[in-house]
Length: 347
Image (tube, rainbow, N blue to C red; front, side, top):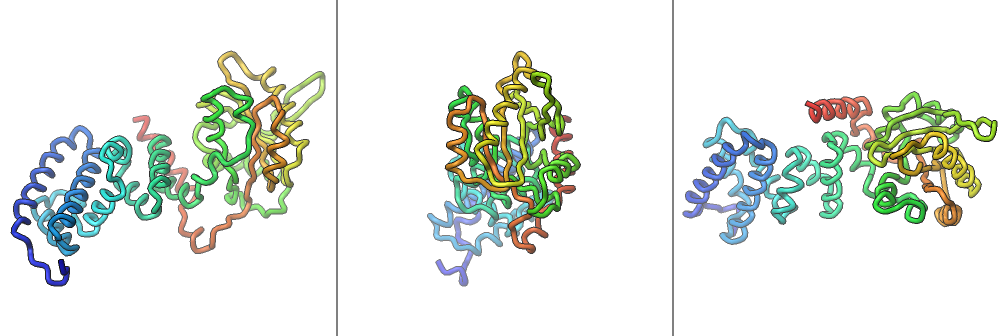
């Protein structure tokens, strides 16, 4: 059908009236579940528009007409602009499976869903971020940052020996815990910075560090002292992970990975298991953070280690172009979003 010479079809009137009934019904149910009902309403409107465009041959210009009539019928409701109806159409096409829509994306705010549509073309990747946003309670700004940092490519990418040293399902959970690389550009340091300088900066900016590490990390201390056989040793960074119920020891190396780093960390993990681990705690996990690594070398170094260890890299400078970096939300904005999200979940 030629969009430039569109006339309103005879079937349009009953179609509009049916949509009005559906909207009124959704308004009543929305008292109980506002967001889910609204998102599913939008999904159903998009699905209906797609269906009549396909079966009746209605063109794109039906959307402005529908927008005007719906806004007239429901002046108290926002969201029936032509642009938002286009989003509803794209939304229904992006999530054609109704059970997934009800169980996953209907639980996310509409703004989150629009952002997923605008930024991610691949359906599997879009679903991955939707699941993470729902599980972790990400705000839209945090979701935006995670997408721009390509978290789906970094999470679970570090070489580890968790499969051989941890029982299932903890091994899978621990693997998904780690990223490669970690982005520490918020420290404002150069690539030539030394280990102690990086460590001190991470402690100063510990909230930003925790945001990059991910959900579940609780900071215990830096240069944490332990005594073994009368000798003092100091752990670069010590955390406790509240979901895995275990300590996490992080060793920082401002160099390329060397096999001997794994041996030293294996020793530290044994000491923490003996001195700090209590009944109910899972085995302590170690992470070596280097500026560079050879993956094969790391895998060989970890193969016969008795303790669960991962090896990741970190970046001190952002690799994104300046025009993209300036468009990202600031860490202060993200912290505010996280605080507001936490407050809403606890209320």
